Image (tube, rainbow, N blue to C red; front, top):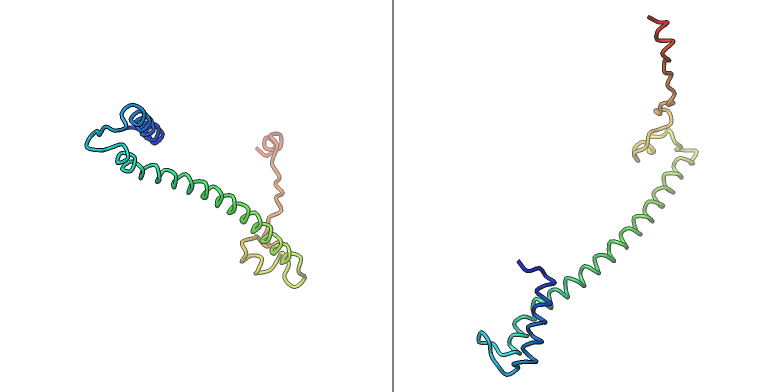
Length: 122
């Protein structure tokens, strides 16, 4: 199967050769201008696809910028809840926002036994 780039370049090569070497001839029942008109749809659609891809790339960038702004705004709201004396880090609102209230957090302290202590215990 011929890929997109090959179709476009092959069409252009056929059109150029035909227009330079036999512009008045008909092939497959088509004159040169009919060939150009019949094959213009694929060229137009490829141009439209390229334009849509460019627009989509721009939309992805706009989305990423909006997401960054949203993250900043959400962080400000969460920090405001944490710093509010009425609510704080230990309130139901903070938990409902998806965070672990201060009273429910574990200390993170672990006391691992060394091999000597384990041998003494045996």
